[in-house]
Image (cartoon, rainbow, N blue to C red; front, side, top):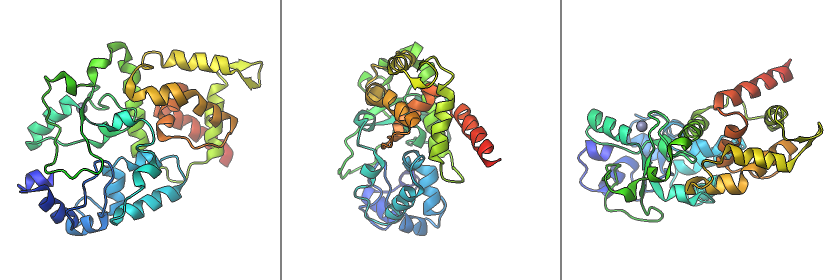
Length: 302
Ligand SMILES: [Zn+2]
């Protein structure tokens, strides 16, 4: 954005002005040299911590993890050494497909062009499990961009040729999948922006899911989960999106297993995408999930 407004002559020059180095600010998802960036921009976007929490996709990935992970990542992106950050967060571990694309919403691009004279990549659109705009409900288009380790000669803005079908994700999405995808985009959006004042209590997170799953017909008798019923319930819920490439790993390979581990208390790393799937499946919205968690937490505190 600064590049356009300042009439910057080259990417390298703009990076140098903003970050004090032509090497910085080149990774699409992970920033670096934020200390220098904030100093040079007189913190117009806030402190490095605020930049991370409001302008990057990092908070999505650190939401349910130990607070230590978020502090370690913050330390790294304040400096120049961000090697390994994307891997620690799980940005590339799976769901590669969604990250081969930069995503944008036609309505947002139009609005930005009207308002600013140029368009930019919105954070919310880049989040995993996000195929529709949380604001307009429109299907996002994806632009395939090779971005890893690349040194670009120019910045890429989301002003693509809308008439080129190769750019469009939406051609693969049918209308009846739309509500489900909207809810998932909304959940991703909330995960990225929610600030948990205390760390998540994993014992109560487990109970939050368990108490809700109890109300479903997925049990053998009253105490044992029936894996077959659980799987049927899951596949039925996501039947309309099982074939969508961007969601295939999360929905087909890990979805049920994640919830199973959550409620059985099996320790295993849960990928951030899995939270979206699990919350959508069991609660259908972030607010329903939070309401249940908060009500359980308040009984605990009494
Ligand atoms: Zn939009």
